Length: 156
Image 1 (tube, rainbow, N blue to C red):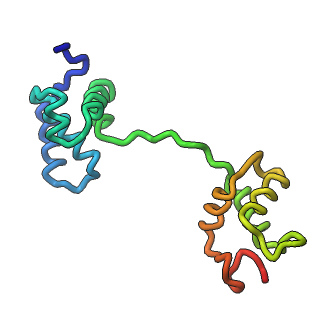
Image 2 (tube, rainbow, N blue to C red):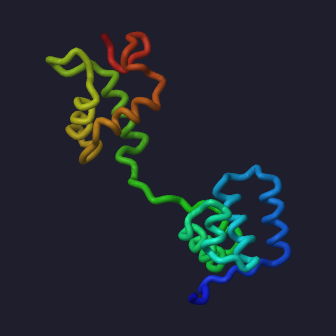
Image 3 (tube, helix red, strand yellow):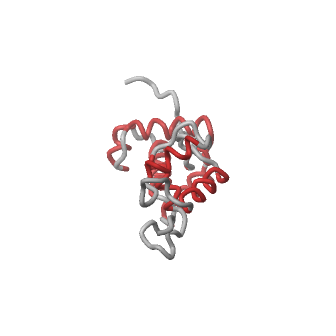
């Protein structure tokens, strides 16, 4: 078996803090699992045994070890921001979208559809491309309802 590159050596204060964290149990499940992983790794357990005991993958154990060694205790326990796609519309552009949705529908249509709104946003230059689903999510954030005339996004 190859020697571990990232060896977890906890100070007594860190062990006590992790034990208290687990005993209280009022943290997220991921944070508690990471605390258990660190305690077992410090006691000399192998990754496979830790993974089975904590009910996580061996990759999670390896990543937690690495994060402890490179970032310290706080870095190993906390969530890192996850990458995601940037928003298609900023707040001002969303306000314009809502204003368009509240305006009269184009000729030949009884009301705005999500696809029509998406096309209009692109036509007005608020975005290079936008999906009807993005339009739906923006409109969902408002208190308006597309089906009711007195609260609706469009006028009947």
